[in-house]
Length: 440
Image 1: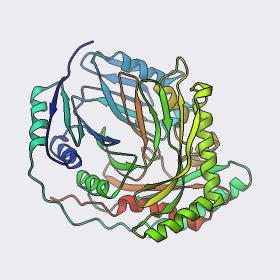
Image 2 (image 1 turned 120 degrees about the vertical axis):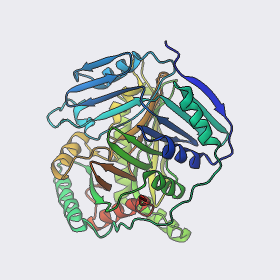
Image 3 (image 1 turned 45 degrees about the horizontal axis):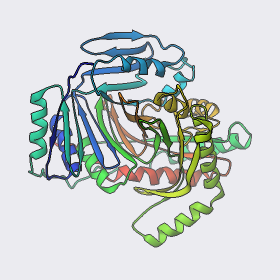
């Protein structure tokens, strides 16, 4: 292995959230990726090596290697093998997948076009921040010193008090409710059991993504959060759900969330809605079939006696909504790797439906545009075989001069179109109230 990274531990007194936002503002001219996981913010900047999937296959670019492979029977296994070839001791990769990757890894390449379906980078510089300090790793001493200077800077920038107004209830309501009603009829006709239908809401102004991330993160309590600019795609979000987490010992965790009610500053109203959520047959059914689907999928890659469901129908508060949540855990079977667990559950049933193949086909037919990052994943993975993949929801997206929000609801036989539309609004409120405009 080639030892390219030089590490340095830095103590500093600044708020880690404020500090990582500052890193993105000052050092994010090139590609960057910010990922928050359980009190640790990881910031990666620059590209040492990158790997992506598109309609032509799998591509790796690094100073040492240029590889172009076909899809093959198991494209994620090829991704894993290419990562194994990297000569960087202790490498860590950051990246995203598109929702449409699920069609391709399922063997259907008919809808695969030129768009990237997976993109990950091994950064030149990365920083891991907690309240205790920061660990800097870089292949360039000058870059590492810039990071350290930025972290030690105690000058607080001025924050904009203005917000971009987006009325999420004023757009697409009639069309979305009609689509839900159509899906309910198909479900009652046994075409499928559940499908998640989504809608887009355009953002009419240019946003400052770093300031938007910071404002929204202070108001949300996500399972994971992220901010990125990579391959022409900018995005930020406050993920409510872990798709899959795999640790060094091969322990696998997934956290399906399904079933939603609003969450506000009114404790009494929140309690009433919580009780309503737990007692609503539609919400309980939607959650139960989602958990069973994840359990059955992980059974394909985990030791059979290791699977269990914990915290069943625990109510989890996430920003402006509260969800029914459960934990599905297991241990990878002999010969299985983290990417196998990811492929087994992606996309999670909480954003596709049940049965998944029928739901995915329904989404392709009835949604007007590809999902891309919505309902897909942002993730970290490393040389030790760990992988942490968060579900991309409660997010803002920008690409090709367009900025938008997107949210969906799980439709089952008992769904009411007006309620499903309101659920999308409750979810959109987690980000729509914190959109900070870009200044000249």
